[in-house]
Image 1: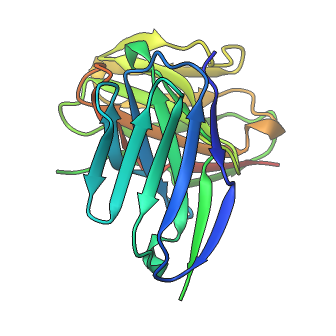
Image 2 (image 1 turned 180 degrees about the vertical axis):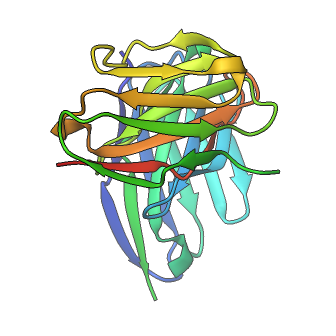
Length: 111
Length: 115
């Protein structure tokens, strides 16, 4: 059974800092890994999708990496802004489309 | 394009009552998912449809939860009777197909409180 862990559970940083969020998974037989953002009271917004054959994906100030063999992914946020404050979730997708989510990291960026 | 629509947004009921949630996926999306998200946790898949057929319902508590997707478009999720531990956000998502490379698009969720 796939298990996904996100550390830390919460993170508070001053504006402008670069930061890294971590995601680890127990079963490396995955099809892809996706990072989502969730704002309070809202649904999930997809940030980056990394296929199992890829090592990283970039979008603006976000960079996600994937090391399938070690069961790890990181989400790097450059030059953080208060608007980045949200909960960040990673989801690992196995066969037949089933996704397993971590419990998220709640990020607070202080002005 | 319009996103995934869900209603109602909020629902408060007493235990042992029944409740139903509705989801309208993105037009043309064949795959539809229902997730349960308990406060402080990540979403947990309850059921996955491919068109109007069930692909995975292994984590659906079938003694009280049911879901259908008639005509392969809209879907309803029902809880009967509700328990206190059913208090959660129920998220609907859709993707173009069930192929694992596809991105899932989420609706805003229905927040359920069972008293």
